[in-house]
Length: 153
Image (cartoon, rainbow, N blue to C red; front, side):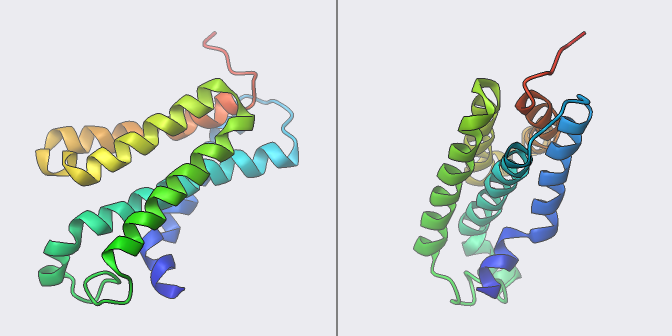
């Protein structure tokens, strides 16, 4: 279990959830407890999925540079990590369903971009950096739009 926690990068996941909560709080809307849980959990779980799929695609290099990591050390099999990330992407996206269409679309977009980043975009320099910056910024509108009170004015 510890290896899965390490791969999910809990501090990163916490910051993702907190950024979403911050976006929701900025709307000054009344938010019920279930919605608070969902708007924290959905992007946090998607972030964990992204971290795990990143480790999956990095496994060949990590065997040389970071052999202690869960996949290269053999604690977690590559296929287990790939499957876990897909399941977490699905769960995180499903948790956004009750939050509305825009949060759902953001969750789908974030999942696709995280997978794409790990698969190839991270090796494309500036494009990879822009992708991560964009994903980080998406946490705030995800939270705001989840309240149903977000307005551009």
